[in-house]
Image 1 (cartoon, rainbow, N blue to C red):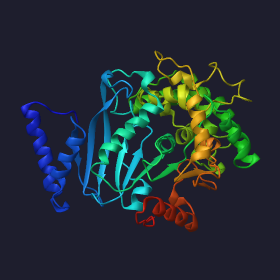
Image 2 (image 1 turned 60 degrees about the vertical axis):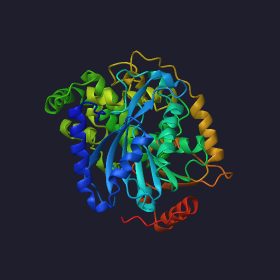
Image 3 (image 1 turned 180 degrees about the vertical axis):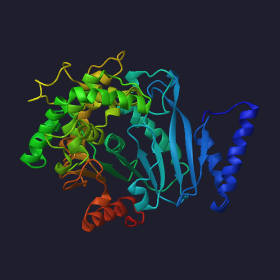
Image 4 (image 1 turned 90 degrees about the vertical axis):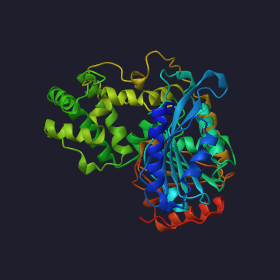
Length: 438
């Protein structure tokens, strides 16, 4: 919600806030107090209240003004969105570092610690973007400083321990935050967090070609890639039907979508932990092939709304963060549209030169200096090829779930591993921990 300044706007906001206060009357009457504190911490704050959800007394969406360039405060601001889940002033705190747009989800650390949670939308994603994106300011040091500003101001209200957490790109950011500002958070839980070392890191291809599953399953994955491409002519009208049904246009023409889906398939198959028995056989119908690709890759990945939503991510991946490429070995005779690269999904007007210096340096720091960080990975997940391997000088914990994919979480581990995590979080945060209820 944009800050309302007209008389009518103030009246509407008062009604919204009054409703929120009435609905939360049983919460101890701290709604108005918390609102005053937040306004002081974030001048120009806009607040949108949601219905409370147990065990939180308030669930609010905050929109703050964040500096476009932390090295030049005069360069202007952009709106940045935060979900605030308020349990109480005396509770520990979890800073959720969303790597993309904001999502309404509660992280495991929040449940384990009975904590407040503050989920921060990544700069230039979702609703946290200026009218025109200055692409050169979409860099990790700027995004980490966003988090530091948010935490430092919230820390004047919420004074107990802080834990950072995030998943995938957000998991990497949680670890980067801890490494960049040692001691600012007392613990970090980084899920499936890749530290990528090249623009298109070949370790991901080696992972799904040589290290996961059985040779027979890997061959079946490859065979399906060829089956998909052989069904090209039957799949193209199905893509048109999908476009009409969903009311979206595709970013690419059908032949190119099919080529991309085929080379993307092994990465996604192993990333999300599918089983070999789910792969259609060589004699599968076009409908079976289409449905399976929809499940594993999702053809809507290539529609215009999705490509627009993910364009900031592709820019980060291909200029600083690093990403994965495509292996066309054994497929070239069936591909029809030329070279395939994720650069195609980046903003055309931006400087797309890649500089991996930052991520290589941070990978070395993560290896040597990971303190109070828990790294969670799934063995099947393609991104685990880019996992951190913490050295003996830190006290980090790394757990890899056998047959786990990109959705691997603490809940997926055996009791003794979960207890190890609870014990570490208790030691680092000095807060009581509670076993996950699932």
